[in-house]
Length: 106
Length: 406
Picture 1 (tube, rainbow over the protein chains, first blue to last red):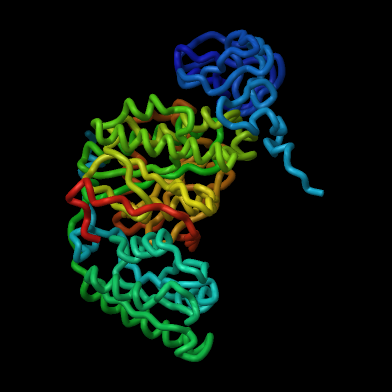
Picture 2 (cartoon, each protein chain N blue to C red):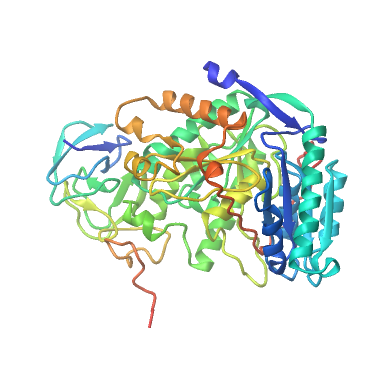
C-alpha cells in the first residue's frame, strides 16, 4: 500500500510518497492507515484529521495555511481548500495545473 | 563524524589564500552586444567559460557580482570583452582582477575589427592565459574545511521538503562540523518562518541581521505581489509559500546561523550562512528577487561557493559556469526519468533503502569526488547557464572585520 509520511506529531496532514487510489498507510509520527475520499498523487497531502473551515493546516509542526472550507480526514488538502496567510493570490490558482487564474491572455 | 568528511583532494591555491576546485579562464562580456564574440572565443576551448552582463547602462550591483565571479577561487585568469560603447568598462574589470594576483586582459571589439578578428584575438589570449595558469597555479591539498558549498532548490515538489532538502541540510551539518562553510539564499522562501529562523541565530548580532533580512523580504514580496511559489510547485503537491518555505529552509541543516551576507560577499568566517539576494528599497523598485533558479545559483557562487547543490523534485536541466552544480532530487521517479541530468537520488531515504545519515555520507563522497575533478552531470553535459541582472543592493560596511581581501 502507498505510504503517506507525517512529519510532526502536531501535523493534521501527511505527504504521499506515491500515487494512491483508496487508502494510504501512515509512517513517521503516526501509524495506522487512512481511507482516501478520492485518489491523491505523489507529493500531495492527505488530511489525517478533520479540519474545520478557518482552522490551521499544520505540517512540519507549523501552520502552512488556513482551511478555506471544511476538510474531512482522508480528503486531499490543496489549493481548493487551503490558503496562504501571506500570498494574496493564494486561493486563485487552478487546482490541477497550479496556474494563476487572475491573469488575462486576451 | 564519518571518514567521508576527512577526505582530501588536490585544489588550486589562489593568491588570496582561498582554494579552488577548478582552474578556469573566464571570458566576461560587458554588454549584450559583445555576447556572441565572447561565446565564440570560448567555443571548443577546455576550461574556458563565459559570463556577462547584458545591460549597456552600468549597475554597481552587477559590477560587484561580476568581480566576485572574476576573482572566484575556481577562476585563474580573466579576459574581459566589450563592444566599445557601453558604460561597464572591460579594462577596469581586468585591472581589478590583476590586483587579485590573477593574469587578466581586456579589449573592445570596435578597436580590433569585427566578429572574426575579435574571436581570433580572444582565442589567442585565452589560450595563453590558460597555459600560464596551468603552468603557474600551485596545487595544494584541500578538504571540507576549505570548502564553501551553496544550496539552491528549484522545481520543488512534496519530496523536496521531506528528503531532498533535509539530505543537503544533513550534509551541511557535517561540512560545518568539519570546519567548512555553507550558504543558502532564497530568503523569500523563508516567508512564514520568522521565529524559527531567529531561533537558529548564533548570537544577537546574527539575530539582528536575520531579522532585518526577513523583514525586508516580507515587505518586498508584499509590494511586488510575488511569492516564490510556482505552478510546478503546486502541481507537485505544495499548496502555500509557508509550506514551501519550511521545506526549503531544511537545506540549511541544524547548525547555528552565523549571519547574513549579501550578493558578492564571501562568508567572513566558517559556518552556516544565509545570503540576502533581495533588492534593497530603491526609488525605481525594479528587479525581481530571483527571476529564475540560475540567478540564485550565480548569487551563491558570488559568495565563494566552489560547488553548488541544486535540489529539485520536479527535475531540471540547468548547470552553471565557475562552480560545478550537483543535482539532487528527493523524487526517485524524477531521478529515473531524468537520470541523464540528475546526479543524486535522495528518494532512496523515502523508500527505506538508506537513512538520512547514510544519504548525507554518500552525498559528501560525491562532493569530494567532484571537488577532486570528477565532472558533475550538468558539467559533463556542457551546461553553463548564467544570469547577471540589474539590481540595487548597498554594499554593507566592513563592520564584521576579518573579511576576505578578495
